[in-house]
Amino acid sequence: MRERELTNREILIMKCAWSSEKELSVQEMQGRLKEQFGWDAKRSTLRTFLVDMEGKGFIAIERRGRHSYIKVLAEEDEYKKTQTAKMLDFWFDGSSQRMMSALTNEVTEDSVDHLMGVLDELGDD
Image (cartoon, rainbow, N blue to C red):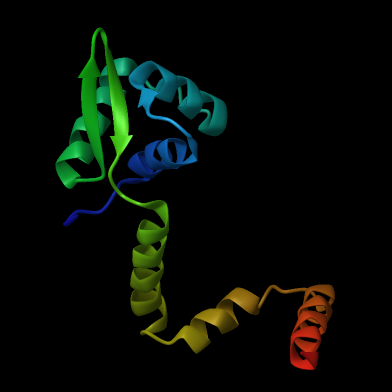
């Protein structure tokens, strides 16, 4: 079970790993981090993060020949649910209604009209 939280940099690494359809080599991860997030991570720095993440149970590092590959062990949806529940408890005292109110505070009138239309269509069935 994953006990420790991911750091902000580790979250960027996981976002790259989750968006990939295959296991990434450390070198490929470096390229994706630079491309997607503008983080030009040195190989040694990235390896340090990866070893820490492996210890937390989020990934496994597998050596194949001359390259190391990152295997994802944690599901993205599971992580999102866990983080959302923590945010709900911490910021909104467990009240999903208060959370939704905060999230919809910035909703435009057009968005509300669209949502109401969708709900009306669902009610017609």
